[in-house]
Length: 263
Image (cartoon, rainbow, N blue to C red; front, side, top):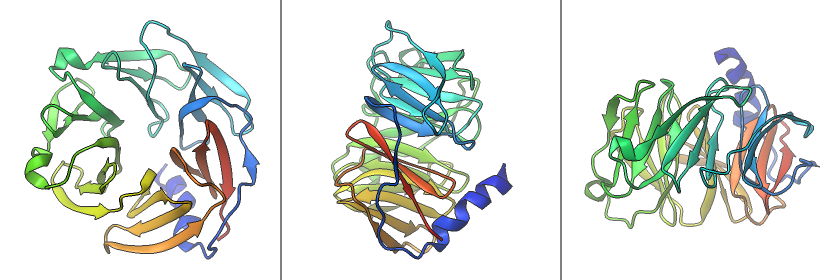
């Protein structure tokens, strides 16, 4: 899997182009959130239901549960343990790659009454940001609290509106919407803030963070703390960004546009 990921990274880090247009529209519409796994499968919330589809739009699996409210987030970074979050019911669902429920976690039973956002961790557990305590918490597969940050209001003087979390084996990133990205190590220790007030969607590949800002894909080398590339797109906004095999997948007006990147 590490070799596969390295293969996928090469075009991103070596791209020469400065603009791109959408090459293909994913045929399924009314998508509120989505995620692409490392095998190219697309998991999306469509009209409240979760679907798994291939890159052509062929639906492979579906999951429907009208008793848990809307799924506001889906994370397929672990292709064998798909995470979906119902904020209304403070419940995390974990699915296998056939969209069969593996387990559920009621965060209120963990004394987390206002989890603003969650994300898969590399250890098959999850991270969450609690709006009441203003802290990150990491839980293991067995629901053991294994790490946590300091309260964010002690780390920065900024207003806090944490809307997204991403972790890889080097970085943990929180999107503080309207301010920028708070960067942590994978144990939850704060490092710095990358400031950008207009960023929307974001993702990370090794040491490179990519985010969408006013029509541009912006590439930041986190180790160097430096912007290294911008690619102008034909989209004015994007709600999600994902990467698979030379292409960015971007959610725009509830539909996914696929942008091919030349190396």
